[in-house]
Image: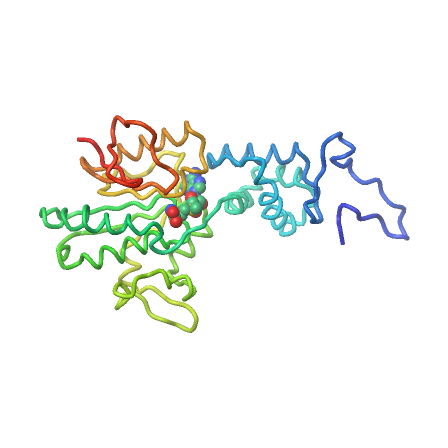
Length: 301
Ligand SMILES: C[S@@+](CC[C@H](N)C(=O)[O-])C[C@H]1O[C@@H](n2cnc3c(N)ncnc32)[C@H](O)[C@@H]1O
């Protein structure tokens, strides 16, 4: 039943409904669902998302916000977005704040997305560094979503393994969203998703189980999945030989993006590489980074 239209039962006289968005003089919208989301509620939600994640949700994201948070209203048994926002602002709403954060992030990803980055990683980072005699290599997948990116890095490193046999190689994979991190840690994916993994990289790395594939314990051990909000202090020092932060900055405003790019640059080794998403090119000259091809940046010495 449409809760916005719910009335009292015949036995008890209908109680007056709380003032609706319309009666508060706002523009109500139900987006075809059972709840009403006023302009004021949408603005309160977007302000909270910006505060906790730096993510800017513009007006065209209203339907997405409505759909995703309607699920949380149903799960918590609340009947308005205002009540829901009150809950996550209270100390007892701390658990729901995590669910709120998970609900508003966009986690689209795939194996070997923007494949030229992995070719570059192998040819211009992993193989040269291994040949140079370096014994410690660190790569960070910042905003790793469900893990396809760090597993693609791990498979790329395995392919370069002959030259890296004696190298201590580790991948740090971080995200704000706890649901996606759990998927990454499990290392199990629908077979259809794994179709993007080149055939020559599969042997010994993943096993088929029904309509799913599972990464071997050896591959999973290469990656440490950790919860991290990029806007907060980073509890590690690096330095990293390469940082992947792809299709994450796109959700931030210019100031947040510039601040993060500087922090990434400072967390790189002397000539470490920063990989950004296809629509996240840096404009103009950067004091700490120089362009090395499509959304690939090398730390200036
Ligand atoms: C679109 S996915 C990109 C995944 C992967 N890097 C790729 O390019 O395929 C963006 C990820 O950034 C994460 N994210 C958004 N804001 C974040 C923040 N403030 N701190 C950490 N991760 C964040 C989201 O949870 C989401 O999983």
